[in-house]
Length: 168
Image 1 (tube, rainbow, N blue to C red):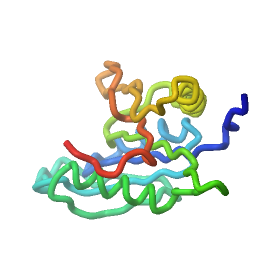
Image 2 (image 1 turned 120 degrees about the vertical axis):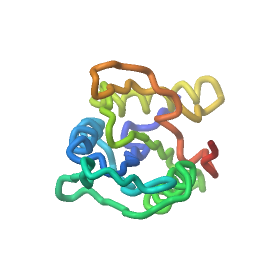
Image 3 (image 1 turned 135 degrees about the horizontal axis):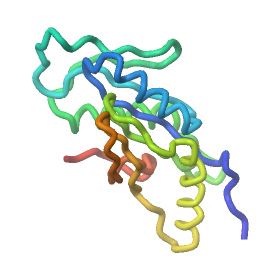
């Protein structure tokens, strides 16, 4: 039984945000605990722009790659994130198979819970897929809201290499 090495997959964080000010720093820090291979931030409205003077532009630490724009819908914004992640990280093995590409989706006002264990979760999901003969498509994550409440949020850890299009 040959199993994939822990480094035999890619894990990309994908954050959607718009004018969430300093809250985005907490989201970025929580994502960094997941030992990501890359973090893609898409800053801008999905739909009509907000016009609230109390909301400031989002703040990002140095080195975070930010794409600014405007998308007609949230689905189009997430599709753009999916396409960029695949463009940057799709890797083929010598036999033509794709290296598994995981995407972790978080909004700019959320905090990822248990990010330190996420690479282990990804490895476990790969092994389970091998054992079951069915690779998973999505898996819930622990999401911490700013009021301290916690929830399991489905569809936030996804196999990007298994998805062609994001639909809502």
